[in-house]
Length: 195
Image (cartoon, rainbow, N blue to C red):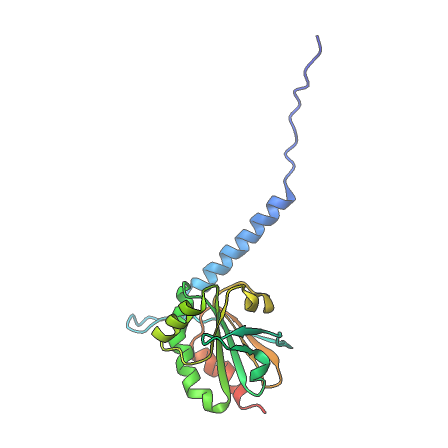
């Protein structure tokens, strides 16, 4: 009678599984960081700022052309003489909706200084985006992006995400998360003074 081999297999950890778990933990940590208040606030009557500080970067703006909500194709290069804040957002995204009044107020104040915001909605149709923009009083240019071309161009799938492009076509600032008035004034306003 043949003896059966009852040796136990060694528990070899799966490197692919470990990588996935590691990435998952990093994403959970990032999400927790973005959801935590940006500043301490002991006055319950005042809103807590959730804006993160932008990262200073320096690379050429991507070539990107999309249709605006009025059906006209526009390109980032069309705005080369301005300071441009590209804001990737979505109708369904709560922090995206929360930052719209701040972006709109900053745009109205600084448009005479050569500043423009291009709000690029990720995934909805032209009519849905146009209706949303009108209901929320968005007067800055709004583009719609059914294929996520803007997020791919900036290599970032997070929403909201924003990028500031200077008058020479260089991306100078990058944000992931909700933008506050304080951060716009601190980081974008000085760029408006550059030639």
